[in-house]
Image (cartoon, rainbow, N blue to C red):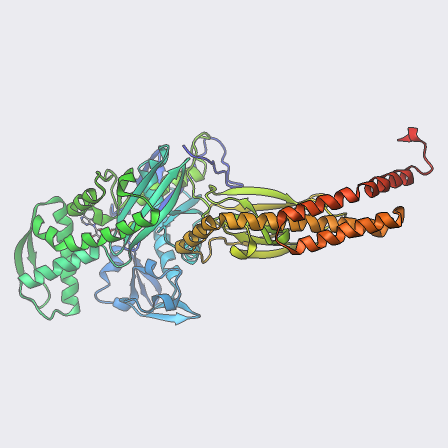
Length: 618
Ligand code: ADP
Ligand code: MG
């Protein structure tokens, strides 16, 4: 069940024509590509039958040398040219990543982080594009055709710059991005949670080097990420390190050099993965320049080693729940994502924490790619018409500034995207030929309390009386959250538009802060709004009166004019105050005082129009 159906412009398909679309999980450690074949989502393998592609690229003087496992194997001999975990760098400035540790040389150019390789300087976007190209080729080989488009997943906490950079990487790889999808949302889709009426779900994602917890709320078919937390330096790698240390201690190895350490960690990873199936693993290792190691490791020993790490993931879980303002008991389903959630101890501890059995039925390292494939398949129109699609929502309301510094909301927050909404506005002054359009984001009623997104001007409005022009302002938010605002004067078709990025720079914290303020200030805002509205109304009334007096003042007797002037002065002084009720009464008094004058003007107008005509002609 869901709200909206997407028909991307120009992408509606002819019936019975199946379009090739893929979902791509561009991971820190591993990446995958998946598609829906005969209604069933599946990940695609390379010629060697491997589904996971290590997110590692090896460069030589010619350019990209290898991508995947072969590239990973170069890490020992050619560290500087072997780029891994590039997802940690994408879309971030040099200043943001300079303090992190990297196995390769990171340098600065125009504020951006670049990698120094034998093939020259590489940006994280290029490296990601090289990974995506490999997956694209794999998909085209195994599907035997050109791809119509791809859905690419990103962490829920990725900001606009990181999302934009991911999109750029895809474009560089020659992929048509149907949309970016949050990783936890993709996992929920793979489990069909979007088919449920509603619910709150926790997505626990423990990968190779990162941990993410996301709380999603499904409502009327739309997923909303209500909280995210995590640890950017916690994952399966830490388990490998802990196990390698345990082995080194057992074998009395001290002062290990880099290559010995690497060897041990790689072996530890294999042992860890074997311990997922086996209760006990026999180890025979031959570390370089060290005595061979023979030992056996039992599952409970391993559990003890990783308990502290698992415990560390529960802290962000608590934080996410607190941020979401919900209790553990309110979580309906828990979904396990990421290769490290295969570890039995992780499953056990997470089940204990949430007090429910998490979903583990789908391969945890494939689940994100599978969900993305399902979404991609729907987006290119391979699903029956009545099948609907879950979508993201706008985090904050979008609107424009109207007279008196007020904000008129055009798209309220939590509206499913993509969405198009139009609202009509009119000119305020006689003969007004231009209109300034100020686009804002936020929940407050007053412009100064919202975030300004863009300003532009609609010029060339034909000169008409105040209120005569009809200006249609259209807001369009596409599936990636990018907003386009356009304005058209309906009678002449004069048109102008701007593109704005509503989410740019607004972190979750910022969004939350703005929402909180809006709630706390709702009453104050309402008061301010009423006052502003009355002030605008008073101004409009005064301007209309002044225009009428200038034109037809001679229709009034001196004492009538004096009375009008008095009411006028009264309203002008009331307008300076902050009593909206008094202003309203002032407007009404002025209108009462000018009733005769208005009637006389109308009569005069009709007489003028009828001059030289007989009544029958009308
Ligand atoms: P990422 O999302 O960071 O790209 P993945 O979800 O692919 O990472 O997870 C990679 C991690 O999963 C690695 O640390 C790997 O050792 C671990 N992993 C994979 N299979 C198993 C398994 N059978 N048992 C334990 N850990 C595993
Ligand atoms: Mg992942």
